[in-house]
Length: 568
Image (cartoon, rainbow, N blue to C red; front, side, top):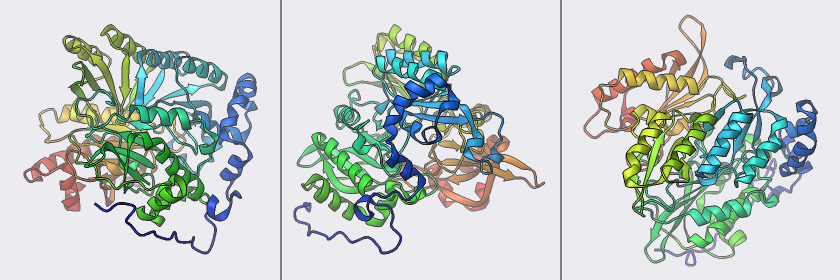
């Protein structure tokens, strides 16, 4: 194996001549767009004091515009979509015309780690201040809706009493960090990332040195061989591996993100020991802060810098300018050993059991969260986890209590033996609350699941077929990384009538036990589906797959090889 020390030094190329990209270490820190001006004028972290002392006391109309439409995000707050505005108007109205006087509040839960007390508190806050709404996202956190500005300080107080916060849950900051939901409990874990994730969250969240990044910044860390944190689509990821000389540690990946210009993360080929995770994270984050592109918002994610630099140059800058030492080369992760959603009943390393249960596309309620916390405590546990696939894990259940716990979860609509469609369907917030959305997602996906369960009850699928429903092109539901990915748009039928619908992506996915590496979905020219026709389309597609597939062929393999006629 070639060591870093033996590689010849490579000179970092100077930036290309022409228009500056707003890279602080290259072009200086003069703001080049209105968002950068806003951030330079006042750090987003500072708006909390104004919320507590002015806005919550004087009401929505007292909120200054740059705070409302900018800095509030640093504390997990977005204005939600005004009810009754159809998706066809999303692109024609100004954001201020689309917004309501209520907020979506995102509660930060790094690694999806929760106690029953914390889950109960979220449920009570939902009941008391958010019209009983609560959505579990694919970032392992919870989103409340209908939150009024007057309620925000009280919500913060009650969250902080149980060790929770909304700090930097949105904004140009390190967002909620994904972590393996079975960290520290799985019998087949390579390395436990619990302490490393805790240090990252405690040390760097709310740190003004990293509260003004070029764009949002997503972190993931796992030590489980199922590759359960979607590491290929995060800005920085640490993936558990075993080094032949140095033992268990992490493989470093950077520069992943989807949205309108999807790009998977790349390995730097560097091995990171557990104790060095925080300083390596800080180094990668520092590169993004100092060299990231700030002139154009749509080019400001880390993936664009990595695309221009390449992994070798990125690693060189990390080691020479930010760490001051070389990282050892290391192995790539092995192929995933099983599904990363952890649905089902599994034995823990201590002999007790954890139970993974599927929500219906993340939708729950405050009342259900309170009942969930009560049920878990009745079964002798106080620990839960959310996954990066909108699932819920209950930990530490004694073997003799597993059947009873499974039954109570079922009664709450949380199935540990879900149908393939309930298990593998995800949906973003959608038109109901999101100002960017064009179509409804939660209800559309829920209705499609129920209909597909009915229509295909007699069909035995060789694998779960992932169905991801997104309300706009931004891919919060990972549409390009799904077997069937649906991007919301207005679709015109053969009679010239417009309907909410979807552009279809087929055959995408992340590295898993059924595929060796991640791949973006195939877009078939002209293939669009009206939302009301979604069950018809998916049923037709699944039956065609089952009829045409060769022995051992996965849905993704079939979809990428099939003629366009078979996919329509």
